[in-house]
Picture 1 (cartoon, helix red, strand yellow):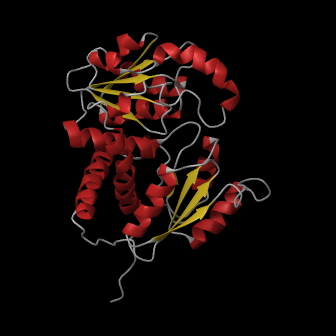
Picture 2: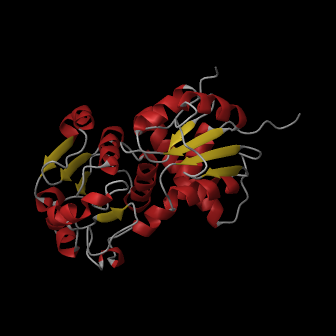
Picture 3: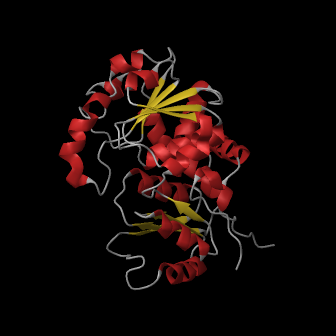
Length: 307
């Protein structure tokens, strides 16, 4: 079987590769802004398997493939039942014989690892319960564009120690920054990721302690997909973790605020926070397109040109 490069986690690339992908994202963004046609993935097809709903992930991958000259096929939860009937490995063998890359948004991370182990084409993690590495590419590209290198800077994560938080921990390792996580007791990020990061990550209870002097403050919804029955409990528990303008005032003067969206205004952020000049959430959302185009260009072999 051909060995393909996969992107299931930020740890699948070297720090140098990650920086070159996000720099390339900015170049591709510039090409698009100038209306330059650039189609290195002509005749290439990306299969997109969604077991969870999606707005930004679907739009960015589908539009990205089209802009790169290729196509994307969307498979909704109704169309695919990975592992319910046909084993995941079998599914991967067949699909990877027809496609040039596969993007999967799923629940258990083991679905991705099993699929990748049996795939002859690159497999991309479009979000799992453990990680959301594509979002971090966009976040890191956004920071780079606004403030330059994030190396040595301080980042604060406020709220749930979820898949986004786990990916921020991996980013702290790969992009070499300090991460402070403020979360309620019992909602810490995965201890395996924390252990891997060593002294790059600090977990605190008080969000004010986390944001003091931070150059980037990020948060996410308090109730992720699949946790809806916990909503009332979480609203109460996470109330002290709302990010508002006063909290941002404690951060560095040139702080940026990011949110991977969708946002629940009045919950994890104050009603007005996305309108604050320190918020770059809209640039961050757009950069999903550009960062993933750079990722696709990096992973997918271009179509062979006839001699």
